[in-house]
Image (cartoon, rainbow, N blue to C red; front, side, top):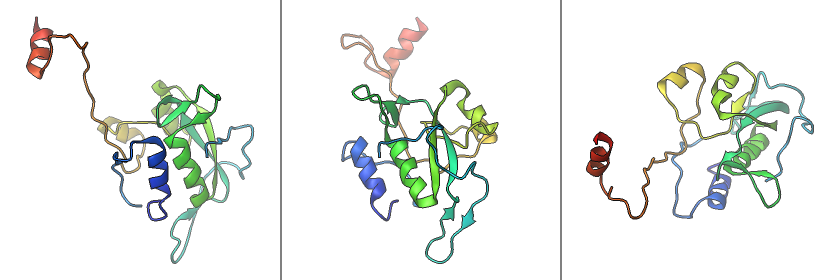
Length: 171
């Protein structure tokens, strides 16, 4: 996806052109369990040869957990009611490259990681922070984005520094 430029197109669609995702090399129409036309569950892949070393998943149904609550990664567009976002576009592109049918299935964030571990879903398409504990439960792809967390206060707040915040907490 990087070499073809497709990942860059998807990134530009959802992010400021100056924004870059931190990832390693390697349609807004989304499928549902009722309209999936794959060959069944994904199990074993045939690895390509020569220039195409990507696996061929044989047209299987890839069950993908999405919460649809993490703009711009996955969300329901209020204007048309359609599920959209970076995760959808990337999985749609991967489905073409790896020969699978994406079956997007809404899932609650609270149980998503365990549901993947238990085999309820093949993968999760959501912003999931990699932690040591989670890494013991599921396998992660290479991280592709780092988001700095922020604390916000009202414009007229007296908290303007870390020390101000610590003083506030301790009083």
